[in-house]
Image 1 (cartoon, rainbow, N blue to C red):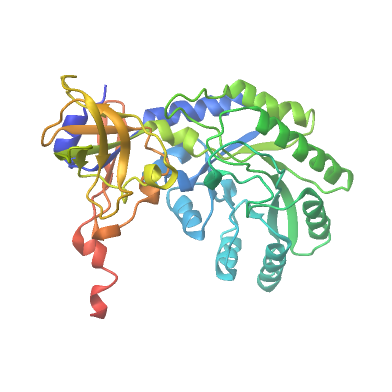
Image 2: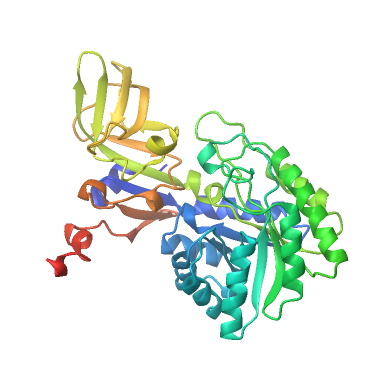
Length: 401
């Protein structure tokens, strides 16, 4: 059991807490599900970019899926091998493409013909060969939140199959492009196997047609998206997930690349916040806490559900309440309409499954300092990011007064 009271006393609140043992367990389960084939687990850095998290992934033999040059540099700084880093994302600037090519990472994942032309021009200028993959949009509806659905025609990501094939043929005959991968990512928080199977069928068919054209694709990148349990979701079997991909590939010799984010870190994380006081306007009960939407925006942004637990509760005098923060927005809440016992000043509330898209999406809105992050390993805890100070917040502005 995690002693949250001790952690709150030691590090203060609000606070993010990550159990690294859970990350290890999840990583090994996923790796083992593909053990019959060559595989590479590339953690989606956007889910949780703390350097200590990335270093832990490196220690497990993992790589990184990055969607900015900043994430690429984070991964390298944390000790991820360059040949295990993929640079994805729709809008790469010329200077970012150039820097990625100079760092000689595994491959750049391309989202359009126009982007490929820019990569080819920059590689030509540098006199290097750019290893590339193409993100293919299989047009599959995964029934997830529209903001995290990425595999439909209406989404900005990827290209259609016929466009992808044209890109690969052009890359094959380019002096400065080497097509080595094929990629899909259909969305996030997916709790059914069927969309992965359907996407695998589409992409494996394209892979075979490329192989027939003597285009040597080495990496079959299935993206991420495996969901976790926030409320009452029935999560998918990793065995069935892996088999849905392997069945579509048959005996084709490729390295399977998987890009989990939420699956690895979501359930390892907790957001710890302290009760300031209660407010009741006669119609509604509010539990006001020191954590806010700038710390954990998922509930406000996605109407996302996180289980909350009031620690050391007597379970008496229970009624419905909204858990809200100090931000000057009506949308500032961590949970709504939850049955909670009567709270008092300094009671602790734990928001669960907060390890993914929590701190990475936090901000200094309302000039609030971003919170500290703590890692748990076995019986030990350690600070992996200190709490910001006011001086940290104004550091890039004060010299211009």
